[in-house]
Length: 274
View (tube, rainbow, N blue to C red):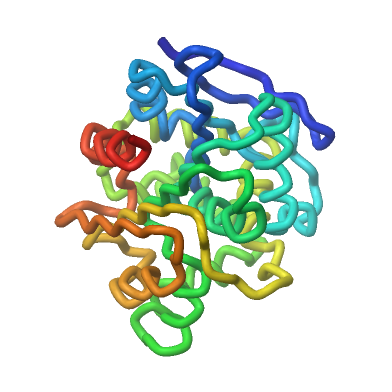
């Protein structure tokens, strides 16, 4: 059974979905762009049924209660701070962290900066930031794949994404994500200020510090049809993990792994956490 929570922090209250016993082993799941907590609906339910306490929040900008207007309030420092603040509010001294897309990037940086708080790390799609930097420096294909990160900083992006019944926003999902979820994402991001807040993650600028290696036990899942992240960054990620590393490559699956193959993604997650 999926519950709906509000997680109070100094930044505001984060909306979240949750499942599992209150005293279960805690797992926090971070969604990507242009999604929301319901990206993890299947995984949250499965983890809950297996005795974990799984919580997936709508992150900064996606939760109406935490939607600052300025782009400089969406830096990696703010996003990682939100993760720790939510864990503190939930009473979690240590927890397992899961992320996809932008949520994966935040998960990597949380593991870099707060390894003492994490039991394990699981990331879908997004390579380690150091591996991505290497790929951007050495691989022309990755530079082409990542061009959207610069393009979306333009102020015309909101209009282009929402024009024609949000055709551009809908087409990002490559018709690999269930229609009801896509409709909900579009509805949420069509609210006043919501899409700008989500795009501010891209407009906030690069992290201030260099990415270190991750000492937390890590699973990284990459799909061969990912349009955003290529094989160079994916294979490079192993070099940045020192605490035990598991790499899973899934064939013929797009960027949207947790929603395109929810059962397989949930199984991989359970195996890693166990």
